[in-house]
Image (cartoon, rainbow, N blue to C red; front, side, top):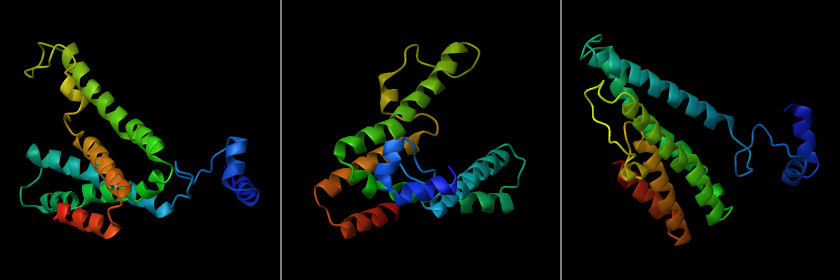
Length: 190
């Protein structure tokens, strides 16, 4: 969307003008609040470091990199913060998401976290079934119900983020003070 359309939408009633026209601002979040470019940049950096960390870890596991070399130091450095950075960045918009109401918040979390969690668990299971007997790993014959709540492979972060989001929503609904939530979060990280 070009800047003229954005400025027109902002000057002619903001959110209601955007809703009425069916357009959304390129720089708006799902809750309608303006997005900050630095958050997208920080996510991009964290994703890049995560991918690089996985590549370096794989190269080290196959013996292509020294165990005590710069690759290992990079791997250790990246894994010291990239997932906490993702969780912090994800938590920045929880409060504004909750302001829309508990129902919309739950539906949004189910669509953005739980649905991909189940879908990817299925996507990991199905190829195992298709190549049954050609690999040394065993795949259950039917899609296990535990895959609806138990993460496979690297999907732990989706379920963790879902549980933490739900915990935050319950705590805010119970009017737990922000300082207590911050203390609990710091304690959890430590």
